[in-house]
Amino acid sequence: MTKLEFGAVAVIDALGFKGIWRGSNGETDVSPLTTLRNSRAKVNGIMSKYARKALIPRRHADLFAAFGSTPKLGAAFFSDSIIITATVKPSAKPASKDCEARVGSILLEITCLGAAYAMREAAQCEPPLVYRGAVAIGPLRASGPFVISPAIDEAAENAEKAEGAFVWLTPSTIGVERPVNQGPPNHWALMGHDYPVPMKGGARFRTIAISPFVDNADGHARAKIRAGIEVAMTRSRGLDVMIKRQNTSNSWTIAIRSTSRSILRCATTSPSFGHHASPGFVMVTSGRLHGTRGDRRALTILIGHA
Image (cartoon, rainbow, N blue to C red; front, side, top):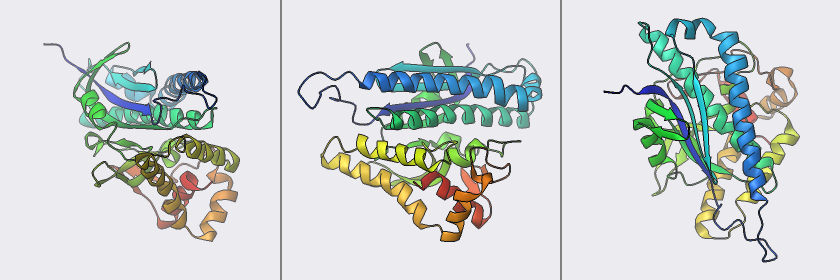
C-alpha cells in the first residue's frame, strides 16, 4: 500500500473571473492573462525564496535534518485557479511527535504565504483580481500538477463556500501551532488574522483568514491593494457579488474600528511595525491569535488600515 506524503494545500480561484474577457468596447480583452502570469511568478518566487533560502536553511536546517526530509513545493495553475502545496515524504528516521508537529506548522506557513502573495500581487495588477479559497493540512500526495489526498478533498470542497474574497484555514488546521518566528519578518503577524468568515447559507466560521496585506506596512501599497479589491468586486452589480463585496470590506473596516487612535499612531510610525516586524510581536497557536490586548489591536491595524 502506497503511503501518502504529508503536507498543506491551498485551493484558490479568482472571484468574478467568468466573462472577464469581455472588454467594455465589446472586444475581447486578454489583459487578465497578465495578472495571472504576474501572480504565478510571485507565488513561485516567494515560496522558493522563503523556503529554500530563508526559512529552512537559516532557521530550521537542524529540524529537517532530524526529520530526514525537506519540503517539496508546488504551485499548479489552471486558468484562474491555483493549487499550492508544501509536502514532505514520510520520515525515514524515527521522528518525535514534537518534530512532526513543527514540520507541519512550517508546511502550513509556506503554503499560506504563497496564497497571501497571490492575493497581494493580483490586487495590485491591471486588471486587479481577488481570490477566494481554503487551506487544509494532512496526508497529501503531490506529483507535478496532480494532487490526491484527504487534504486536497477538504480544501477543494470548501474553496467556494465563503461569501466574499476570503482564503481561510479549514478545520484540519485546528491545533496546528503557528509559532513566532525566531527572527524578522514574522509573516504570521501580517499574514493571518482571527475572523468569523461568512459562509453561504448565513453561517460564520471563526478561523484564521489569510490577508493580502502580508509583509506590507506601507500605507500607499496597502491603499492600492484595497482599491484593487474594490475594483475587482464592482465589475458586476449582481446582488450576490455586492454581498461578497460588503463582507470582504467589512473584514477590514471592523478591524480598523476596534483600534484606538493611540495604537494607530504607534502602528503607523514605529519602525517595529514595518516590513520586518519585531520578533515576538504576536503569537498564533491553535488557530487563534494570542498576545496582549495592544498586540492584537496593532496587528488588526496592520492588516486592515489603508
